[in-house]
Image (cartoon, rainbow, N blue to C red):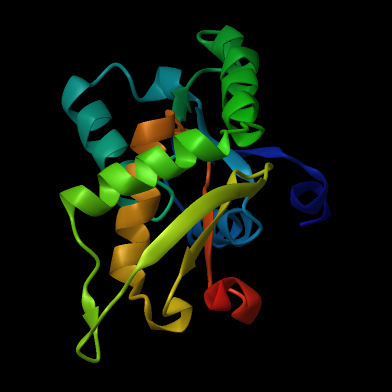
Length: 191
């Protein structure tokens, strides 16, 4: 747990022979809760890849079990034979690059505008939910603040939609993204 706290990118190492354990899922949940970049590394792949049907089923099972972390790339390798081990460091670099990405405010607002045009915000208690503007507040992970009229009334499914649209718009398919919603300050509303 301390290693995850100190990291930017964590590699969750799975054993291809054992498959996904409850402990693996618990650790993955901890990684996600801390908004760390993550790579799902599957070791001992040489024992599985001989059987194409088993391989396909195994990968489908892993994707399903880790569906709450769709951004985490999966790497299959064998430490024993060295097969595909050379892909680990480049993947870490790619994940960290996205994890450390900075998007300008103008680009963020254009993406928000296009996202809202594709799927309008839902009504909340009969009132329109309005987004005014957005900005990126920080990196590690990319964190966006969206200013709106009813920040506490946004349904988690619409938040997930916004995250997925930002992920696609900014090419952040291998990193967690955090979105927070804020109301405008009273001084700004008066203007």
